[in-house]
Image (cartoon, rainbow, N blue to C red; front, side, top):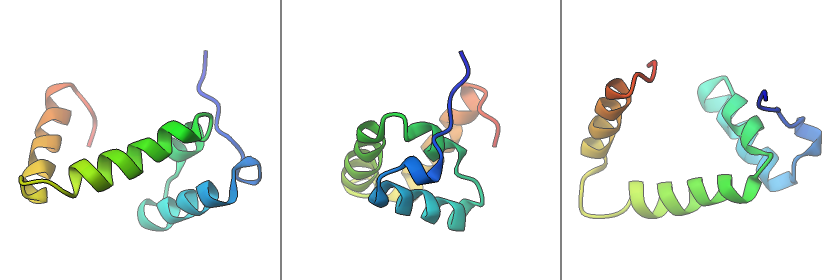
Length: 79
């Protein structure tokens, strides 16, 4: 079953703003458009994981970025 991208006009206004920011920063929002099928999970991912775990804590963010890049290469994620 293919993943369905949600049209921007069907997204909640606050979520659409997140998508537009993603387009500005990365030039691509497919991840966010597909994630709009479960916006509560996407909000958790960005608000709970990134804000409270990834950008906070005792381990410096550059070390976390290096670990994330290393893990991505170990499981075959394209850069």
